[in-house]
Image (cartoon, rainbow, N blue to C red; front, side):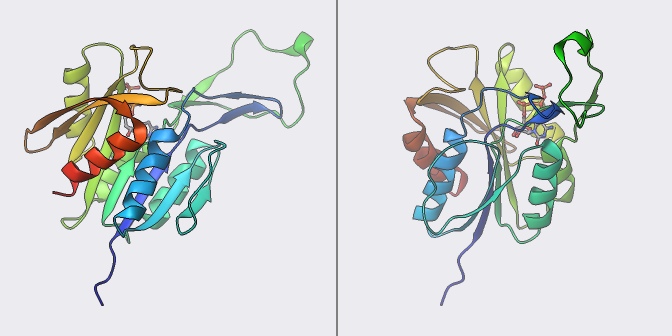
Length: 212
Ligand code: CTP
């Protein structure tokens, strides 16, 4: 029997808590990552999905690890990375977190006028450093300006095989939308523009390209 390949995918936003009722996050719906997980499952991959807090149904047969913070997402991704053949980092990880989380709700009268933030770990960069010959690593780039240039920088910096560029300044596509439009760039300098489509359709096209 042929052993099925392992696909590890991250999806959704992270939450970086300030106190028990407030957090820093972003509008990622998780739909693109979940669509990629379904597509991988259809193609007979063993799928491990690391999901930030989203309310999306999950297909039976896909293993899910639910996380909240960037730190939890990092632990989940690192611990499953070595067994994975194909890794897709689709999550919108918060780049910063508060230096501390108050254990009690901060009353509005006591709420500080500014909150000190520290960078979170760049999970994909760390995965790129650990990547082995037999592994394929795919990232996403959410950009609003100099899109191609910025996406290519991330492709190189994070040691990726492919990066999917998302121009999130266009309202009809990207964050929270049912539709998306991506351009894929490879480390071997290929460029493939995929036209606007549902996230399920794009997931299928993305898999056709990255598994070629
Ligand atoms: N990413 C990550 N860990 C972070 C931030 C981003 O793993 N702390 C991953 C995302 O999942 C995505 C890729 O890195 O696959 C690019 O994310 P993006 O938000 O576009 O860019 P950043 O690396 O955060 O850089 P910048 O904010 O400067 O554009």
